[in-house]
Length: 156
Image 1 (spheres, rainbow, N blue to C red):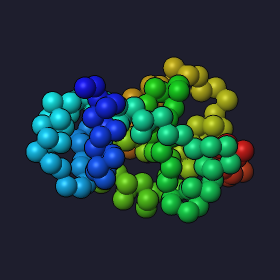
Image 2: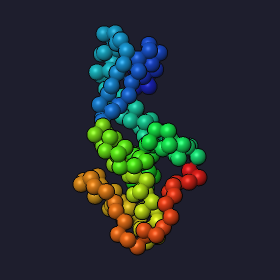
Image 3: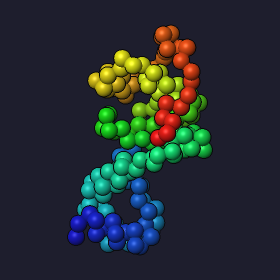
Image 4: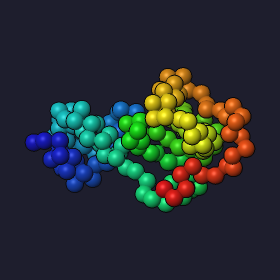
């Protein structure tokens, strides 16, 4: 039996699985056989579910809608090679920061980054690594302040 067969059996039995902060969360009544399978394939199950969760990307036109409705959206960045969290404002960023380990970018930060025509891919990666290590917030030092605020991902 492989991980796909295990997942198929568990799901068919009404078991719900998800990964939160690299930990497998299970909802439903596991039989002893199910428990043994989960124990045997746990790392593979976590890896497969994590890949599937990371591959979920907003469809074109959905980003602004999701931000308006939920206040946040998870985005897989091909440039950064990981999932990041885009949030509508600082208040939501603070709430989300307490409940996950993703790097968070506010709309204000995204406007600053997308408005900087000198920012390179390597520069973005360095900024991202700094946010990951130290947290903090990207601030506008003044030269871009006159820029009109708009959604940095209109049309996505």
